[in-house]
Length: 338
Image (cartoon, rainbow, N blue to C red; front, side):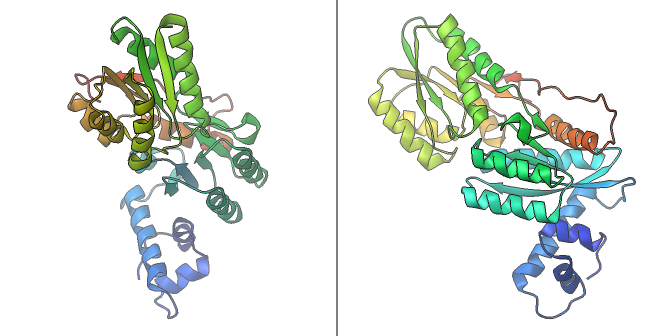
């Protein structure tokens, strides 16, 4: 099998040993069909990232590990694949380890494999637990720089945080939602995917803080642990609606917005204002249909650039005084799609 990339790059992308990739490429016996498929998929992924043109300069290989709903990880992956070919002064390849939920042992296994294989950088979106912090610290000690994405861990365990200021995002949601609601007591449902994500807790804290200050007549009810998955989120929203008759507004931090809407419809409860995060494909459809009032969004492609630049800076390929800022927040309405 002729291949356009070094075998070590294919091995890195496929998560296989160099010897295994060598057997596949040279058509030697004793290779499972699934292993051959992994090598073929790795070559296809590298081809998508780099195209047919060879890129000059040093090459950096990074890992992106995210626990998040697929609609989010798909959007982030597309942003990285759009940005990586244009990065300078080095060229980048990326391996993606994506899942809607990860058990602690699964995350540990992924990060352990990265530590053994090596990486020029790890971008991590995972629960903000002591175990996650310990795993990140262990990678740092092995020379793998770690940056967190959207949600954070202890600062001494990572190189940088990539994403929006989550407290400001929640405060912004509260500022607009409070002014859009009619006067008088109203219940606001806040949905988290999981309380273990520090970024989501920061958004909720910003939201509650502004409501207390500016709109104290609004009551907040929070549901969590739906993990952004439709079925589990719908069940939790239905329970909240049964217990709280005044809920008529939604601030969705954790996603699964179609399921939230379905629960309100099932209970014949109207939604006066519905605020969501991220202009992914699903939210774009809901916004265009008038199901969402507005979406708080930030540029995933800018996030991808920031992550790559942080790793370039770590490897002394950018000026010493280089810094990044939190991603700018955009408010997207049905009349102003991105």
